Image (cartoon, rainbow, N blue to C red):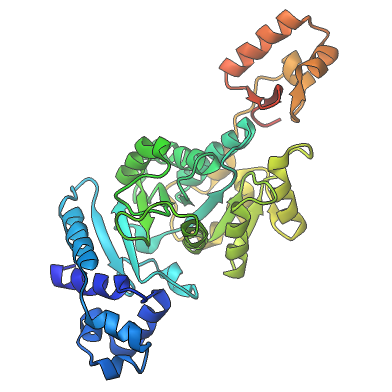
Length: 385
């Protein structure tokens, strides 16, 4: 994109009062932004209001500053981490987003952009406050998907999103010797790409830029406003062939992503959990509404594999890749714990151990990553049965 092209696209999309709908109507009527901006006020008023027409025909210091800021951001790209502004209709624009009712007019991209048009994506979403088992499920499912050549799409949020990105990066590293390695993961964010939200994921975002892709429809400097995230969720759904909800409360934003995916004709999957866990109730509600219940990554891949044009690993690898590591069999505390959250008193009664011995066993299991500590003095087993 030349400087003149960038100026025209940003003047169109950032003009006061010109939202995405008006911009798409203008593009359909007049063609490229440079042609739109050269139209007379009378011609523009055939498509938009008089106030919007005036906004398009005038300049502002704010828009000029944003143009300068974006151009400099593009110039600061490195070969290892490319940067690009991708307009609607460009060859790098994801074809799947064109099927949406409201595709973004511009996408800001940071990372491995060339694989974007051939994307085979699986969205993974869930709670920002997952149980240890939920976070482990997200990592292991994403790891398996990435090993099999799928791109894990999520939102860079705390909790399940972050675990899914981490698992995908791990899986892609393990499959690094495979030919035609696809994108490991895409993080669709609700801010400008010159900032990381939440801050705790700064290192994760940098690793995604090197081995995957960060995408946003918001201009540089855009803050994490509340209304940005439901719009971001529609892009997560739009970039994917299916959405897997790992853990979600009944009021979770993840259910919005699942609904949007269903409205777009995409498959929705959900992992069941304990009937006692609030973080499982959203998944159980989705299953009652028709989402496919899944226990292993292969359950998802069986549904979506016909859509995968190419795979970096043999198809049999999906069957051999476990969705989560199994704990060593026969441990008496794990057997007594089961898979539901449980408190110390219940474990004392079930195991017959004294308090000091039980606490020592729990600490060892926690350090081994086989037991997680939950709020309220509860413990939960991590891993499959």
